[in-house]
Image (cartoon, rainbow, N blue to C red; front, side, top):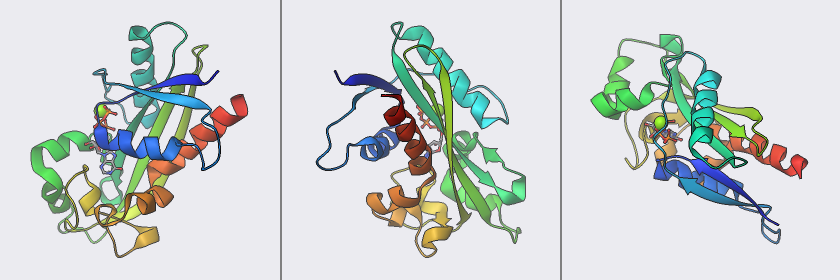
Length: 194
Ligand SMILES: O=P(O)(O)OP(=O)(O)OP(=O)(O)OC[C@H]1O[C@@H](n2cnc3c(O)ncnc32)[C@H](O)[C@@H]1O
Ligand SMILES: [Mg+2]
């Protein structure tokens, strides 16, 4: 039987990328079925990305039927010049000042370096929590490309140095993104587990 795994997120862009990342390879059978639920989960204040993700999944567990395998992810954008801020709080910065505001934060800083970090917390059917993290280095630039997804238009990854995430095809972003690296680890875990 194909195992069902719940992904709790209210972010449609994340969901789209994760569906692509966890899709079975061509010619291979699906090993699990991904189900999306949007439950508003608390994001605790912490400088530990792992702690935030752990708390999110533990809370999701409390509202889902016992024995549900579930994962969440939390994505941070960490500026080198700010010792890792805004980090997990980037969502609130985006809401208040938009991508331009984030760019302005680095005015006067020579170091425009940033790291994107996705932390996945997976709670298996037995309730054991596993953490997977993926990172991509880049720099913050003036907005270019589509405005569809968070800070995509201001993040230029080192591995594709003349395009922002927003200017890249989704498949190309997925080759190098922090999310793809975190989910590759989850996928490996799921495959080894079966
Ligand atoms: O329901 P959840 O999964 O928590 O979804 P969210 O939108 O609240 O997401 P986060 O708590 O992880 O906050 C991350 C913020 O960064 C944005 N973001 C996440 N991944 C991104 C990516 O790959 N590219 C650009 N922006 C991203 C996202 O839109 C949020 O504003
Ligand atoms: Mg969130």
